[in-house]
Image (tube, rainbow, N blue to C red; front, side, top):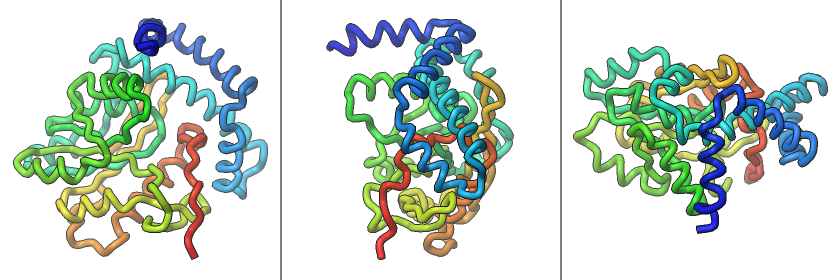
Length: 288
């Protein structure tokens, strides 16, 4: 109740700000978050150091500062979604090429789309059903706070995108045999533990990845696509979707996951400042 009475009006007010004012607020938040509070600065620096050991300190500090500027932008852009119109969203979150979606829909083929915590994944979720003729749905990890769980659900599903809690993925997809769907997964999520994970080299480090996407792809034999998000400029993003695997049922164990890892790594390298470096991605050590 406290959140609803105190926090919601503030966030709603933020969502009504014109974009120029919103980004002036973001500039202020950047100063607070980066220079005063130092939010997870140690985590970010260790991640950048280990991921780019061959780069100079000056290069890593530049990426670090740009990351925090992007982080505060995206934080406010997420809540801007509460009042963002369909027309404005489509202007600011484009998806090219559209043909891959149209072709799959015309052929009645469902697909699995993998993306990472790069760019503005919240706007990708919001706009998904606006770009796809098939039923657009996103697999997500539920938040512990009920207020913010309900709030983010409302923003993400505002224009028709179906949200599926991670734990229900296989059950829900198994019951959609008569539907043409495009189901988005976040591929760089941490597994619940490192023991039963898929281990590989990612950004110069031993890294654990979840098996879930590959197992579902092989079981359903849905095409696997990778969705790359580029930040064009402040408040404008472009998603590019490409085919990674057309026949998952015929792949070897680990093959699809490795394709996803390499696509994610390539995506991050294209704009490193726009990936979520504050995420404790490497908290597990590879088992002996």
